[in-house]
Length: 205
Image (tube, rainbow, N blue to C red; front, side, top):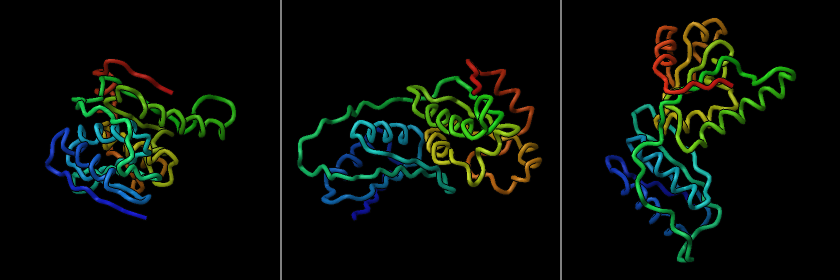
């Protein structure tokens, strides 16, 4: 099992993508490639590159302000000819869309099914051609950004790509989850209203 780390901190696109592609081709056995960068645009382009190589990618923002993009390599490329994803840099995948989530279960009926649907919804949001500008979580939706949430990986990946994730502080306090926030930051009702009012479009599951 090969674990390779590429340090591209301080580099602008396409350099992180070029370095990651070279590292992928140098891997001679299955393993994990980790690329370190310091800006959301680089994360977006690395995620796009991984998709072009049919690799599963995870991204996470670290406490020091850097980002780690990891790709699971099951079959090393080596010198085998492969279709190269375009190295054209995208400037920013984020749009003016705001997603407002007020529950941890989507739809009415079965609560168990609702939890499954919500996980699928948040995953799908992260796959949009244009990512939302902001994700707002309040009332029961506050549970989705805390420890133990099934959606944490998807939310962390979006946060690393520059999506703002805000959770209502009053709601976290009400549910006893203030110390369990695991992604994004705490906000208040004034900011929630401000974000909704300034959105180009708002969707709510």
